[in-house]
Structures are given as C-alpha cells and as structure tokens.
Image (cartoon, rainbow, N blue to C red; front, top):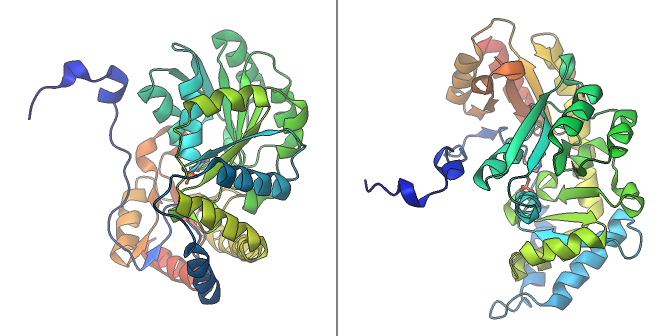
Length: 355
Ligand SMILES: Cc1ncc(COP(=O)(O)O)c(C=O)c1O
C-alpha cells in the first residue's frame, strides 16, 4: 500500500474507522435503534407522501424552514430560537466542533458517547475527559475544576448519557450551566426515553446548545438530527453546514413523521415499560445500572467473561455491544438495547445460558 502518511493529519492517522457490526442478526440489540418499524398503514402513507418529492431539485430553503417551524412547535421553543438541521446528530456535533477555533479544548465527563472524542481528534481539537464518579454519577467539582484549568470552548453532556444510561440530576446540570468558561452542548439523543430536557432553557442561556435526533425513536435510517440555540450560534453554524446536508427525501420524511408524533410516543412508552422489566430481570443475574435511555449497561459477575458472553449471545443470533475493550469504568461491561418483549425474552434466556 502507498505511503500517504505525510498527506494525512496526525489526528486522522491515529484513529480507527468507527466500527459498525456487519451482518443481520436475528435479534439486533447493539445500536440503540428502535425495534419498531412504522406500522404498515403508515408506510403506505409515507410512500404516497414521497411521490411528490422533487428528486431532480436540491432541497429548498422553504422546505428547511417548514421543518424547522414544525420542530420549534413540537419542542415548544421560544420564538426566534435558532435551529440547525443535520444529517443525524453526529453531523451536528461535528459541525459544532468544526466551528470552534483551532487549538481549543473540549471537555466531557467520561465514559460517554465516543463521538465527542473522535470528532475532536479528527478535527485536531484537544479532548479532556473527566471521569464520572462511582455509579457513573457526575463529578461536578471535578468538572468545574477542569473547566477552570483547561478553559475549554465546550462541555459535552449527554443527557441521558451513553453508554451508562445515567440521567444526571437537574441540580448538577444547573450548576454546570452557571459556569462562564465554556459553552454547554446538551445532547438529548435519548430524550424520548427520559422525558427530561433542558430545551426550555435555551431561550435564556446564550451558551446552551441542545441537540436532538430522530434516530433513537424509530428513524435511525433516515439520518436526521437538529440543534436549538441562540441565533448567535446558529448563524455561525449555518456557515459550517453543507448547503444540502438534509436530503429532500429526509426532509419530507421528517415532516411526515412529525404528523404522527403520537405513534412514536407510543413506541417510546412501550420501550420504557420494557426497560423496567429488563432491568428487574437483569438485576437478579448481573450488576446493572439504572437507565433513562433505551438501553441498559451491565456487568456479568465473573470478571473477564464479557467477551465470551458476547460471543455466545452472537452464536445464538443475538447481537449486543461489548464494551469490555473500552477499559476503565467500563471494564467487563456489556450494553443491551431494549427490544420488543419477544426480543428481550430471547436475550434474557440466552444470557442465562451464557452465564
Ligand atoms: C449520546 C448520543 N448522541 C448522538 C448520537 C448520534 O445519533 P445520530 O447521529 O444517529 O443522530 C448517539 C448515537 O448513538 C448518541 O448515543
């Protein structure tokens, strides 16, 4: 293979490609997707709605504005709040970091969503992780200290956090919102399962950016995320966003999905109910952490067995996420996405056999 290393940024050279599991397991519980597809009748209506989408045209400003107006209404945003649309919330996160000055630092409590560090590294920004405390609780003094010491441009807070499922207490979140040093990105990817949000605070906090996605509530394949923040932010982020990043098909599908918000809310409620059942069942066999997201983090009782258990489940057609290699506080941990009742039963039965 040719040596192209001198052309590639060190931050890129040092990384590995983000791993996406190949294959189609019978029970797929590794990626926090919804187990529910659109009901068949809605799929027909969706296809019908797409008939009128002009594939020969680039997305129009009017279409983006319509989507933004709908999102603002659904989220109860104050008038004049800025919104930026993204090809998944990953892209939004990337655009935020891209807009930052070169050489800045970004901070996040760790373990957390790996993309925060990945994006910072690829874009040549410094990432500082501040360890969560026992039980994956937020260490507010340690974070305040890190903010004072590193003077970062940004603090990422996944609310609830991935891969722990933790919803940080609101008083801790408020304390962090008071800091002057950094802007705060609150990533509400799992909002449908936590039903707690800082979206209502965006209007009064010019340093608060709230990011959401439709991925976890049944539309992961669509690739759509969005951000709400003061216009001072969104005006700058609009310069970074590639002009047609959300396709006409995606934009039309989002408009369609927002007409059926009740269907997605009902699916999320079913997932929350199953999360409780799964948590109670897991508690009897493994260490499992409370979660306000659509997944559960757990650790088998015998150290060093996570890889073997993951492989046995895979052999039984059930794919979950092995986090053992992440090390640190995630040592020996596995993460399972909440599936349908039947999928969860299959997972629990296979896990019992594997343990
Ligand atoms: C905390 C968090 N934020 C953002 C994302 C990215 O979601 P998407 O790019 O599908 O919107 C994920 C995906 O797992 C996540 O866990």
